[in-house]
Amino acid sequence: MKSCRTTRDIEERDRFIDKIFFGLRTIPGTLCRISSRYQQNWGTVIDGWNAGYIENKAVESIYEDWRKGGSDIHRAIENAIDRASLDAGNKELNEILAGRTVPVIQAMLDTIPASSCLNILDIGAGDGDTTIAMLDVLRAHDLEKLADRCHFCLLEPSHKKMAKLGDRLDNHPVKVKRTLISTTFENYAPQMPESYFNIVTANAVFHHMTTPSYLGLLNRKLADGGVLAVGDWYLTLWSQPAFLVPVLQKLKADEDKIQRFKAYFGIKEGDWITMSQKLPKEEQKSNEHMVDYICFLQDELRHISARSRVKLFEAHQSLKETLSDVHDSGFTTNLEELKEKHRGFVKVRETVTNVYTECNIASVYLAGKLPRQLAHRQQALAKVEPQPKTKSPFAA
Image (cartoon, rainbow, N blue to C red; front, side, top):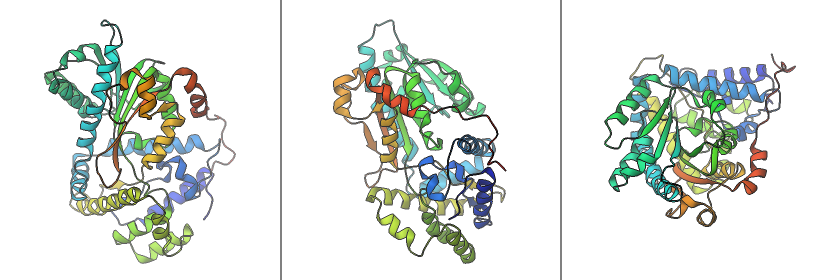
């Protein structure tokens, strides 16, 4: 397998993979979009010269998806999710996230002055599903008065979705103080006040983040005793080039292209089976669900414009790997520790909840910010140094 370090190497490899998928309606997109922990498996050598380029290219590619995505593509994606038996996914993630977070809000408000409020940041708020789910839980448990002591900051780049979000909040029986910010997380992050937010929520957002640096950043933006409440999708299908071989086969790619793909990445016959068998059963099942989704998506896209193509690569990783990043960034999901040291977790029954019983492809986790003296070392490790602005001698 050829090592990729320069911008030219990375672009040439992306073009090669695009050619392998040429003619298919689902395409991988740039490899810069996958998790940084998997880049070396694809031959990418990340260093101080190219790290900024790789991360920026991923952000630009994901932003392009958002900008070009239309209702026809969203409908195709939703239909494919249904056909892959993952239809409970985002809705259930929001309901679980809300059900787990409201008791935390209640417990935190019980320990601060009645005149004080909690600052809650919803990242990638979309149409407001996550915040609305939390308001629904407050109402269902006759806790509407708690909303008076919360200030919601909702971050969403789409002006259209932001307008709908505002209307939904206006029409909801539970009224809240809110600030709506129409921009991306990357643009807003430098402006986020330090140690300001008490709770950060996000659903189906963080699998776009290629490096765990955002977790260290959120730790710094959360006040002491802050809480991270996240729902997302977890899988390892993009972790190895070999795992794409059965995907190409099921998408009915030309056999010649499949052989060229295998030769380029040094994949031997049956490697994908051997590698898959080494994964925990729940990860195997998660990957199988994703392959089913890709195949159904390919079929759904046949019914819309040929120009509508969906990129597959995302920064998904396993739930175990993600929780490792969470802990390294100064948070903990250890319930015993949280009940002992954190005011908000006295009523929490579990910190990690899976939507599906047979796998953890869709899961919610709650993490508390460690006391400052314990978190200092983890935050220092998680802090990302600024990338050098000098032009790389390796750039094309």
